[in-house]
Image: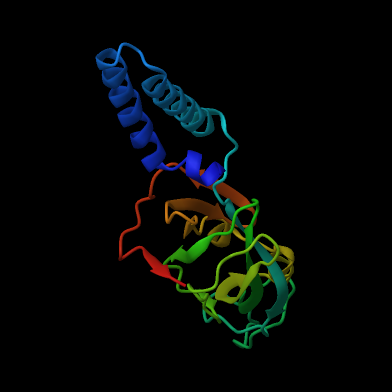
Length: 223
């Protein structure tokens, strides 16, 4: 019943019924039949407006979270001209010396539906951070239900010039500045195929956009 009352066709039928009933009532000296039509149409219009403006929010709310699941630091690599060396030119493994380190972080990108309504045609876009690679794709045909999340596995590989202690500090930092500034956009639809958007910044900042965010083809890629 609620779906019928909030349908746009109900609104149009109510307007037509009110106008037609009013004209009919005048022509028939306010007979009971046009008054019934007027009453039913008016009640339907009031119900439509009440649901539209005061009814519960039935849109799906899709949100994301990025969780680190593993990390690895590669061995020290000598930087000619930067890494410490003795008088004979031999490089020394000093704790405060600058060396190159490669890092590999593993993440789960978790897509959740935090509402009572299913979401459909879920698409995930990410800024073109080429150090961040995604290992599996989402299936657009699978709805995002309220009881099951989508998980996309990711790897983040990068290199930095650090001292030994700085490299350990970096290893303990689950989300560095580059990851935190990487923007995701999630596009999804409700049952009526109305489209919504969520902007996401790791690890768990979600912004429900009122309109489609700007996403240039050179700046974003679909996961």
